[in-house]
Amino acid sequence: MTGSAGRSSSPRDDDVLLEIADDELVVGWRNSEWTGIAPVLEEDVAFSSIAQNEIGHARALYGLLADDADALAFDRAPDEYRCAPLVQLRFIPDWARTIARHVLYEAADELRIERLKASDDPDVAGLAAKIDREEVYHRLHAQMWAERLRDEVRYREALDELWPYAAAMLERDLRPELAARLELELPRDKVLLGLDRGVHGEDWPALWEEMTMVRRSVPGATW
Amino acid sequence: MTASEVWAALDEVEDPEIPVVSLVDLGVIRDIRVDGDRVHVAFTPTFLGCPALEVMRDRMAAKIAGLGAEPDVEIVLDDSWSTDRITAAGREKLRAAGFAPPAPRPARTPTLVQLQKGFRCPYCGSTDTRLDNLFGPTPCRSIRYCESCRQPFEQFKTI
Image (cartoon, rainbow over all chains, first blue to last red; front, side):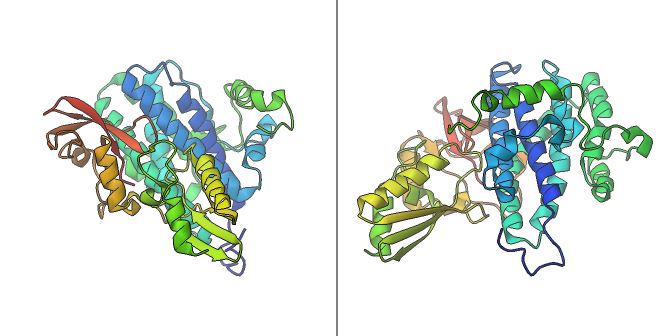
């Protein structure tokens, strides 16, 4: 890609871009599972729209890394995906945990987008700024639900359960800021065992199977 | 062929999802360069997940080919598009079709409270409207409800 040559002080970190792209693709998939079955019609629309945005962000990020975004998105073996354990979890039909993940994910995502916006690579910084314009609405939506469910026991328990997953999703040096913004205590290292990026949980194989099914059905086809 | 002739031709290309506005009205065309028989167009998508992206690109290419030139349409994924780039003519066409045009981009990120009330209904002109859903039928739209004429309406999100 253009832009990064000659700026070796801060080279583009393609590993991080792939991690973010995989998170966005998979959380988009999980969000899309509410299409048609959310508890209220407004949320059918909202989660579908958020899913569309997240998968659009994944597509654009994959496009920075490869000529064929679809091949990068769908042609890897299950253990090659770099998505965080948080986004792999399947919550249907648990709305409390769905909202807890949404709130935690969007807060963590905001921090790493801020970092990308400050990249020396103009392609990365420009795309991150464009992504951020859309993410503003995801955060407002998450905030609305966080306020609505604030005193619900099931939601509080879901937040406690998933908070270590959200912390583990970020690069280590961003975690204290995330904890501060969410007003939560930074989890101890032993709580984060097994939550590392690259670990694939029990919900992952079925998601991969479904996500890549059509593409695998006719290898090499032009769609 | 001149760049202004290409601008005029592309002003006839409809947005695939809101055909009352053209791609020029939407402000998604960032640059047009004519180089002999080749016409280079740089355009930015509105939203990254917009499924109309390829349709827009193909329609522009077909329009340019129709002028007898060779199209080269480049999709630019930078931060140069915002809803502030929708032209005054585009806003008026949106309003006339029942879509509330986007509010100007504020200096700071809007809050939920700010988004609740005060936006103008495109049907009756009342500002007694409320937010029904931040999200709508496409990524670029929210749903609002007018308490005055009791009509739900769609509003372009400000991004």
